[in-house]
Amino acid sequence: MCAMFNGKMKFWLSILLLSPLLGVAAEELTDKDLPRYPAVPCDQAVGSMKIKNGFKVELVACEPLTTDPIAVSIDENGKMYVVEMNDYSELRDVTPHLGKISVLEDTDGDGKYDKRTLFAGDLAWPTGVICYDGGVFVAASPDILYLKDTKGTGKADVRKVIYSGFGRQVPAEKQFRTSAGKIIPPEASPEKKLNVQALVNGFNWGLDNRIHGLAAGNGGFVANLAYPQPPLDLDHRNYSFNPHTYEWRAEAGGGQYGLSFDSRGRKFTCSNADHIDTFMYELRYDRNPLYSMPASMVSIPVDGGAAEVFRLSPEEPWRQIRTKWRVSGKHPGMIEGGGKASGYFTSACGITMYQGGAFPEGFEDNAFIAEPSGNLVSRKVVSNVAPDKVALKAERAPDEKTNEFLASTDTWSRPVFFANAPDGSLYVVDMYREIIEHPWSLPEELKKHLDLNSGNDRGRIYRIIPDNFKQPQFHPLGKVKSADLVAYLDNANGWYRDTAA
Image (cartoon, rainbow, N blue to C red; front, top):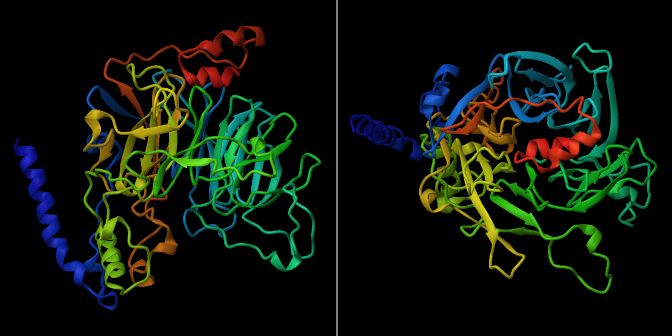
């Protein structure tokens, strides 16, 4: 009771202390107007979190073992490949590039990672990774690369660009017909300015044994450098490719950061202010030129795309000031949430359908969505809108109507990605930054008082497990014969199913 009272007192005191800031004009700001919250040390991080009853959070990796993690993929032998976007958000042009792929290993089988190897560096704004054939495909605009260690050194010695052109228009000196049958005139071919929060990402295996991904908002006319076919027009389209041959095709478009399939093969994505969408069909079914199909991507949350969220962390002073400037007209910008500075989805990302098999009944194929601006993880239960309908809906569980599945009081905690793990847990990838906001959305008068690189030497990865969890034995699949892999296709854990397939 005392702890609760003290927490409420601190909250209201912070509101009283910060409320005068809301009337400050842009030109009057000083550093004193923007007090900063300190980072929470690794050994205290879990203590800053509140999770749903029946579950607990465990730290499985922390700086310096990993920094700026934003995506992971776990190979057939349990090694975790981690995308480290150290050049977020304005350091893309630093050379050698700061982005990396590291490999983390759990050498003693206790569920915690204790060994790090730098697999590859010099990557510009890397955003995605997926394991295949002893190596990894990596998204780093404008390219998708394939990296592999063939010498056993732990470092990639194969580095091959497979697809190139994400975020770019057709080169001005060329004019050709794209795979969508669209002629691109030379005058419509300048390069786009890359939006750091709309880069190629979302690698995931489909039931068709193809790797699917998001082209995101930057799109592009993308060339296949490894298979003879015309460039794909990925403006408002996504893609999938055959990793054996590199043949690829356009898929139904939409989504910003995060792509996931449930156990039935249904595809889901999200964007900043629309936290869960599904695709009702793929482009290959749109083949009647006399009929205009309805939109493939459909928003399915019953509480709306930019629904209310319930953060436990205090609102940052700079966020309050920016909202006040927008509402008053002192600075242009979208007025979200009815003029509130927070409390709604504004940075939804990393959507993942849980398939680990270790959670209690009723959690399979639930959607987990990261909201890094609010320092929280939200959960949605997906079902058909009616027993005889194929349309879907996503809604909060009855006991999570006014609280989140997981939330932190730490304003630096930035969950951005999830992964179904070999042990049945759900990994939460925390980029851990003081500020994660898009630099384009920050007024220059405000931005000059902020350090957008603060925290690029930090990062955490957690796992969510039920209270009665017992660490299972890991069964590496790297040397299992194909005939024996068949049995894993019926495993309760989706990681084993997907990896065996």
